[in-house]
Image 1 (cartoon, helix red, strand yellow):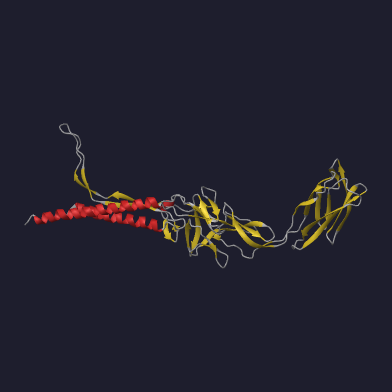
Image 2: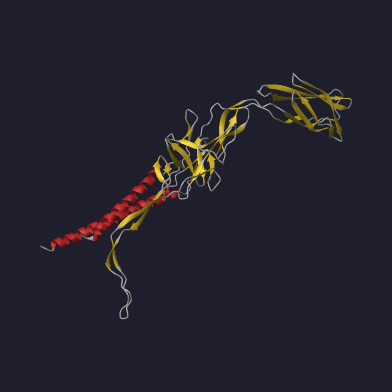
Length: 390
């Protein structure tokens, strides 16, 4: 039989696979973080019709004569270029800006994905759209150890930020040096004990005999009045006092005329607070916001990098698994070791280029038609040979 028939068949088969790949790319044009594939062809074995001859004294050398036996698919390569961002406004949606993959656990298998459309399940665990657990490092007392083993990330619903006792209160501003005799300036500040029970600390400044006296009380303890001495508006005496175990720092006060601007500029201590919401930092840290105003890490998302991402095997559900040619996963935190940073409230769109894919459709279609014509022509030649007997 004619070799052209075999070549035509291989051409049909190869261009059919190109159509399959292109069709899958177009079907996933709106799939989150989908990476388009590209079909690469190569020729198959060639039949040697005439060997090459080396140059001789009486005759020059000749090249080999070979007839190709068709085409085959050399590779179906995945294009890992960055997809465009799509803002969603959802705090649990995350996008990798740069290289890297999210690490997820599906059953007992570790998979990798670029699709950051995450949610929380009924137990507060961060999961993918198909229920795989997102991996990272959980915080212990607000501290994340990225050198520890990975675990399923869980938002601790109902978690508390513990209470802290107030130990220091700082005041600033100005006491008017020209205030009338007996004038008072009162400032209140909320302070807490080690159980988070709040009480009011009252500081009373009284103008007496041309100087200011300050007295403090929290209802249970009272600090006796002490004078504040100012020289050219600067405090030179009576800078601190202690009320019920709380140190009151007055060293920032000034004593110029006309202005009465005394205020509490800082204080520590807090009541216990319950976790209300979270936000995502570019380094993958999940920062919890508590009802007492405290913000502290509750976990950190891990990313994985590969020496050869093109060697990853697609596992379905926008996931990949490591293969013999991808290299081992190198775990790290976003922004380090060549890994990208994270963008919260956005998803990565598919990187399918529709104009290129429709062009590929035309190329594959014409290639298929041309190879089918090879078979038709070969059939006509065989028909002529058969008809020679007539």
